[in-house]
Length: 387
Image (tube, rainbow, N blue to C red; front, side, top):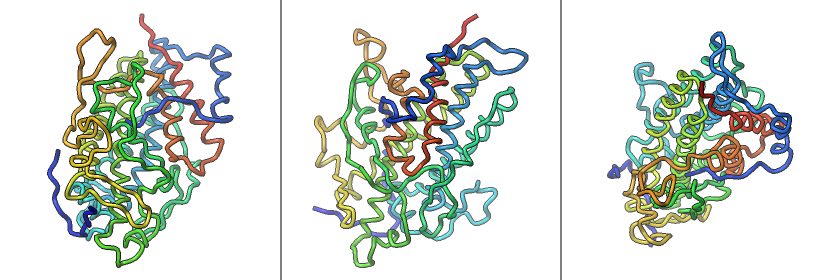
């Protein structure tokens, strides 16, 4: 039975994204020659303060990833964040009236809009820091401004500027929700089903019509709640991907200062992910679920009372922390860890493939995909140099 969602801001009690593979077409081909010609980046240690090739490649790809995250999170913050996407001490009026998207996000957690704004500020700071650090160590920073060509939402609140990413045609990988509740590990070959199917969907209101569910007569504004639920699962997908990526790249770093950076920023990504695990789970239990969006047809079941997968524990919303899983060897006892951790599943090339498959770059140029792919290949080719 459907559960109509009211537009009343209600409190809810508190309680992985990466797919391996290569980009299709030329984007995967460009850059393969880099390896064939023996240009594998190998760490050489510091040389007159300059970064070695491997560490520079790692930081450049991470800067690229953070620019991508900054772009998508800025879109979320404009429409679903609180205030004007500024720190409270800068914004004298951080609590203006909420739009229906913000209300739908608040249904999942009353502090949801603030969390979105905070996450956005973090990602912007990551990108700015990494680029500044690259310059300080004699390496080239990353600039994607030429690729900001995609039209975004026209809903009230959107800046209307051109974007690097597309949040309106997503294929959200929700297998992370299952993976972190499983005792299996993708690094040891395990695969996971989708917790809920979200293909060809939008995670933000496309126009002002979405704020009202397309028509004022729809009870409980189920349409905008479905969009907010999509966003919740996308939040988790993005941040768990960043969590694994930083952990994988940290294993390749040579310079202790660079390792300090990857561990520090990677730890912040973990903090983000844990919040969005809770957030997404709130959208698939009472009092939000079950419900069906009458416009898109998206259905969100109650995972407690009608779990989509067996055993029910693999989608249990109240399991927020990683369940202990197999690690290194099946002969060792299970342990709670970040997973995946290896290049094959969560390296830079695998990350680009997953982001592309998710629809985040729908409409982007071939040049952008090739540029990103080359950066990914160079980052994955880096190896730790031990004196």
